[in-house]
Image (cartoon, rainbow, N blue to C red; front, side, top):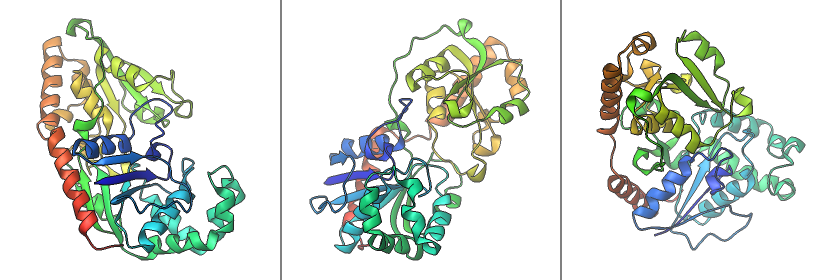
Length: 342
């Protein structure tokens, strides 16, 4: 099949991320290509003819998001496909996707919000101002109608029903893309030389959460300027830090804790022998992830190695391999292509 993967944000359109971490859309594209599909991962432009594609996948985020730079072209792609009754599906890659529903309600009440001057930096803003009634057709439909297939990135464990119930989709699908995550080459460190320290890579300010943990090991607080991090590093450098330290921190996504929402730090900590500390509610059924920080910090070298290995096993044995993920995605694309038009 010929598939287009596009969306509202730069990363959903194949533009990558500022810190070099792989967005979910890249993993999704990798899985689709592994299953033999011809996949374009790119921006679209308003009024572009997309009839050559068997399926178009459009990534969605809250419309008021600062990252929604390609909103207008994405809305136009949805209009184009749905008006022609050609196969279309959505995917979400931001855990705050529930805000999208509230955003839609605001736009329906106040259509001018869609193209207000504050968003003049968005691509095709002038075109959108001229075509606002046209764009509002799809906004209203997204607000009022049941959505087509939506793909959500999750681990195999967790309460997926809590996630899918948020979305007004007739056909939500949770997919574990872990096997598609990039393999980083790191310099291995002998266990006896690993730092008794915690590593936290974050794009948001998590200092209050970290302070509440009362940790005795040092914390390497890494990330973006907005996160008030001590240092800015790429994902490759962050993963190297994981390989050099015993601990990795993972702050909870409180609104969806326990749902199994996919997070790359779980994968990279397990792959490189680090112990991940998170909110126990976030990992139901994975007891090795319920060990308290004070217990971890008091462990001997042998105990640290054993816990790291147990965490890796608990996480990895539930994880589908690359071919299984590719087969799942291929089946899903046939389902979209041959299903009821939206």
